[in-house]
Length: 305
Image (cartoon, rainbow, N blue to C red):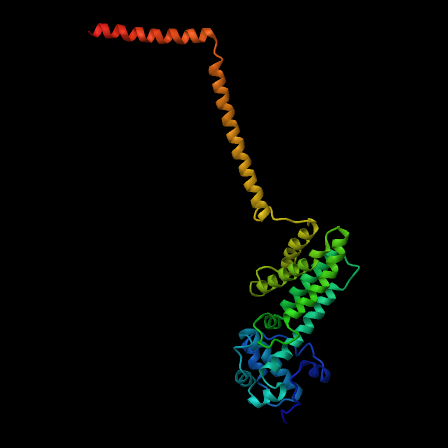
């Protein structure tokens, strides 16, 4: 049976020809699965294509796009390089198909989590965080492909583009919440990016450090995001590190210095006033003390002579 197939360099053309099966998109867990993919010597064109996509996903996930070569893809699949070129036109075409599949799967996951206008805002935050973590758990290699290095000619349907689309949906949700809390709408796009970035980077960390369950991680994400959103100020300010805070601290320091100087002047004035208002009796007592001291010194001098 021949391995030939129509040349298909673009994911959109591929989608028009065939649909993805859940079984073919299942992640491999290491070299054992790669070896298993290459054990079939005679395949239909469709089966060979699916095999190459699975192998490409595993290699791109473990090494990154730049470190993988057509030679390695062909050798792992136990086929010649022309077979890879025939199906995808090259490494870039294979990478584009892998990314396209993962992008569609992740987009569907997140859109479904964000698309319930009747749900409580906190429920949407919980559902979205858990949906992304579930995708990472079930599609570990696909997630690594999306978040690792991409070609210099990054495809239009890149991971950053996906995050931008999701951020727009989050903006719509936040806009309603801000309106209810009488908060200025100009901050909405920034808060949307903050929430997306916080969640995505946490998922990236969790993908390699799974010491907590996805439910626990989702709860931590929601804890920070929700309690932060529920206590936002209309006009937030830096309390210690802003220019305004620095100037206020300098003013406070000057006020304290003036207060200290004022107290010192007052103390000196009171001491001077006390010296000037001593009673005659006190003055006579001081004079008598001085005379007694002088007389005592004279007596001692006579005795010595």
